Length: 167
Image (tube, rainbow, N blue to C red; front, side, top):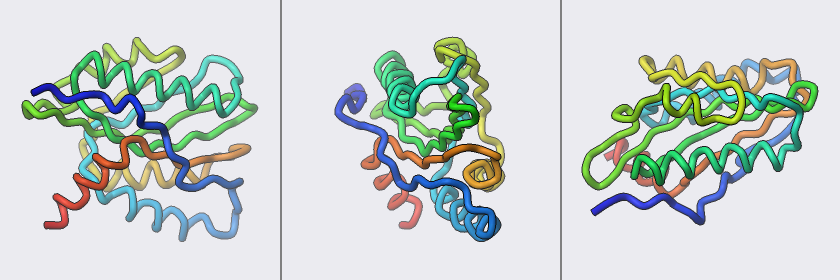
């Protein structure tokens, strides 16, 4: 049985605000602890080529993830942060994927999917889960950005995998 892409999944905003300088270290620790609840496989850095709206940036990310799901026949779950500097969105995305046949995101060519992003992309295989989680958490709060937002994609898979790690 093949895994289906969740066509009705939409990125869900977990938290959005402007960066407040007095709470950075506490926020980094709290976000890092939360994000470290999953075993991530890819860390993607995705930048739009030009300034676009937050809505358009979300649509670009969603389209890229859905294409990855359907092409590779794998369910993807991710937590993403978008930072906007001068209205140019930059995504940091921690991802993992699974299907019913045991295929995971590490079995997929990250270079192929770098080329499919409609902008500038770099995808790294996660080697240290805690380091990646804290890097993402740091980018939530430390950028000199106009705005940041934290998104989740495929909450069902995230919830299922998080429970499996706690058992």
